[in-house]
Image 1 (tube, helix red, strand yellow):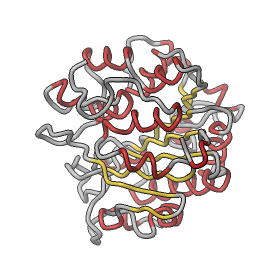
Image 2 (spheres, rainbow, N blue to C red):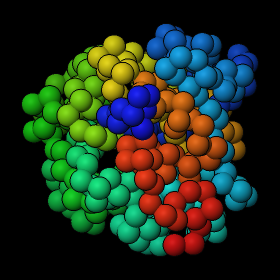
Image 3 (tube, rainbow, N blue to C red):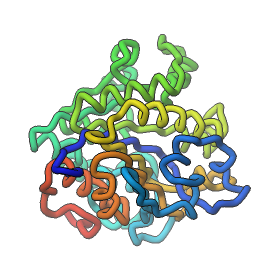
Length: 315
C-alpha cells in the first residue's frame, strides 16, 4: 500500500528491449529528447542515473539475466515479470520472443492478472489487437496477451481503439494503419491520456509497448531515438493526468538492446521507474525481473501470494 494506507491504481507500462547503457555518445537512447524521463530520473536514461529516491518517485536497475548465462530474451523476461518467478532458470536458458509450452503453463497457472482478479480487483490490458489475430489460434501469443487471456481479462480489438478505449502497441496506431487497418493515427500524447484514463478505472492496467525493440533490430520505420521520443511524449501526458496521491506508474522492461549501438540484446540491467503512491515501497522490493509482480501485488493487496519472488524457479 502507499502512504497513509492508500491502495493505488497501478499503470504498468512495459517497454520491450529497454536496457541501461553507459552515458556515452554511442548510446542511441541519449540522442533522444526525453523531458518526461529526465524529470523522473533527474538525469539521462543511462546507468549513471540509477538509483533514484526523491519525493514521490524512485528508480532502480533490475538484473535481467536472473543468474542464467547468455543474453536475456523476451520470452523468459516477460514471464519472469508477470509470474514473479525465475523463468530463465526454470527453462534452463533465455527464451526469445514467445514463451515455450512450459512457460505458457506457468503463465496460465500464476500471473499477475490472474492473482489480482482472484483477489477481486478489476484489471485491464490496454493494448488493441486486430480481431482476426485474436481469433486465429494458430498465431503465437506473447506473454502479456497469454496472461490476460488466461485470466479472463477483456481483450480489446480495433473497435475499442477507434472508440478511444484502447491503445495501439506503438502508441500512435501508425503500424496498424500502414498495414491497411482502418484506424486513426493519433499523437503520442493522446495515447498517454488514454492510458491514464484507463488506469483511473481499474486497479491494475497493463500496456505493452514493443516498437522500441523492433526499432533496435531495424524492423521499424523509425530509429530508436525517434521511437523513444514518442514514448516520452506519451509518458509525460500520462503523468500529467495521473494523481500521484492515488495512482502509481510503473515502467520497466524485459531485456536490454535499444541502448546498444548495433541493437543486439545486452546483459545490461533494465530500468524500473516508479512514480506516485507506493513508489518507494515497490522500488525497495525489486532487484531482479522476478521481484516486480510480488511487489506490485503487495502494494495492491498488502498480501503477496506464497511462492512468488526471485527464488521461485520451480513451480
